Length: 363
Image 1: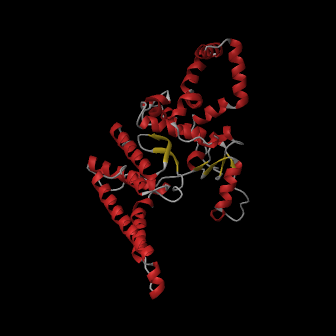
Image 2: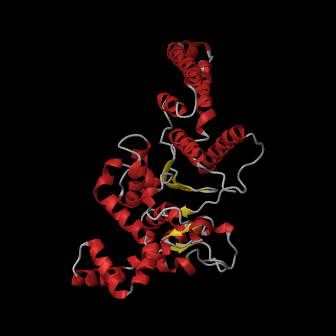
Image 3: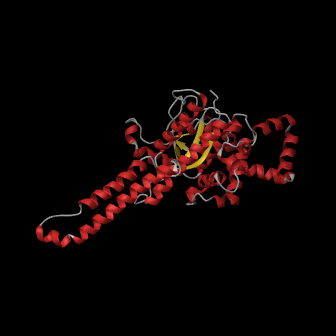
């Protein structure tokens, strides 16, 4: 059912961003449609050594009221005080313990355990895909049911997930996600759809979530080069590269119009749109065909089932490494993991590979 109107989409995005700030996961790209959602999510490991007390409290403020955070802060302060007191007693009683044969420090150890218990109460829900999705979906369901006077489950199925390699695979899937409203015929230009990462990046302003959306897309296009999620890089080559990819994927309606105009009119319209001479247009067309940009653009205008059901998407080596790491999940007769993309994904065959060979309804 198409239950997601403007208010529902805005609320889901709010919950998504709140959970992003709490969990340490990063929303790289997303699109909220009328009856389903798409997310490309980066799940980094917990920082080495865990979170500081201040870091934990900052995360808690993303989803809890300040009064609840204050209670946790008080608990931590008391546990740290006990920990410091126990450490002092251990240092002062070491010589006495050596003389009388008794040990100290149990108070310090208990206090340290108390600090770990307080942290663990929340950190098990951080840096984890399943916990991220469960929390967002549950919070939205509670709000939706309360707002619309209903009860019970909202989502028909559990979410499906695919492991995606940095680089070309991440860029393709980010674009595929942002092009959902174009494929659905809702908008002609993905920039016009406000409930997507690209629409938010373009229209979200210099601060707030617009900045987060731009940072996520920078990560999608540049993570394989070691770039952090830095929104300031968006204004450089990243935005132009992504716009070009999205435009190739959004050009279906224009192509239909040009087909009616005829070949001569089509070439003229193409040249005028790009400000080119006939010779320059012919040269660019030949170059694009050599590089495969036109075929990839057409692929992104189709529903590519591999991007939702492929299990692992990336280079051949990446998929084979994932296969080896999860060998027990596959039949004994299978020798490797990488499978060529077919059907509507065939334009990326040889560059992208899937862990699943989808023989039926792959278009």
